[in-house]
Image (tube, rainbow, N blue to C red):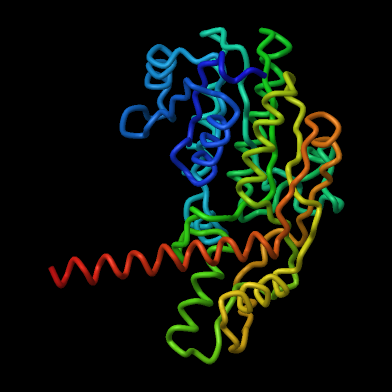
Length: 323
C-alpha cells in the first residue's frame, strides 16, 4: 500500500500501541493521519462515529481503540468491556460500509481464543471452544467483529483485514498496578519492592501458566504489514512463537530490575488461560512479517524506559515543590 496517497484514521492512535503505529505510518510515507480523540468522538455512539467519518473522510481505518485491562480489571468490568468493544467495532464497521472506505483493519485479541485451544494457537481454532472465563466478554466482543467483517465482505464487498496480536508490552505501556497487564505490573511491583527493601513480592496465581509476549514496535509493524497485504477478514496471528512460564517471566523481570527477594505465589487468584502461544506462519506467508525483538531485549528496553520516566517525574516534582 502506498500510504502517502491515503487518508488514514487510527482509532486509539493516542494509546500505547496506537502511538507507535502512527510513528510507523509516518516513517512509511503517510502524510494524512487522523486520530479521533475521545473528547471529540465517543466511538460507542453511532451518531458520533458517523460524525467522525464525515469530518475525517478516511480512505483506510485502522481500528485499534479498545477498553481493556488485566485479569483484575476484566473481573471488575466484564459488562463494560463487552459493550464498549462491541459497540465501537460495530458502529465503525457499519460506517466503513456506508462511507465506502477502501479498507478497514480490525485489531483483535489473543483473548478471543478458546481456553483450551491446542498450543500453538492456529487461526483455524478460534471457534473451537469458549474463551478463558475472566476475559471472555472482551474476547467474544472482539471475535464477533471478525464475523461482522466476513458478513460485510460477503454482502457489501467491504475490504478488510484482521490482525490478532498476542500480549503486548514495551515503552509507553500502562504501569498502574490496578489496571496494567502482566509485564508492566511486574516491573512496577519489583521496582517498588527493591526501593522499599522488601524481602518478597506476591504474585497472582501459581506461576505455571504460560504466555507469549510481543514487543510494541513489532506489533505496529505487523499491523501495517497486514493492512498493506491483506484485503479479506482472515484472522492473522501476530506473535513471536516463544512461550514462557509466568514464573520464569517474573524471575527475568526481577533480575532486570535488580530485585533479589523471594517470589511468593497466591493461588487464591486465577492464573487465567493455562497456556498462550501463537502459530505465526500465516503472518509470514500472507504479510511477509516476523517479530524481531527478543523477550530479553524487549524487557530490558522497557525497564530502562520506565526507570527513566519515573526518575524524571520525581525530579520534576522535587523541582516544582522547591520553586
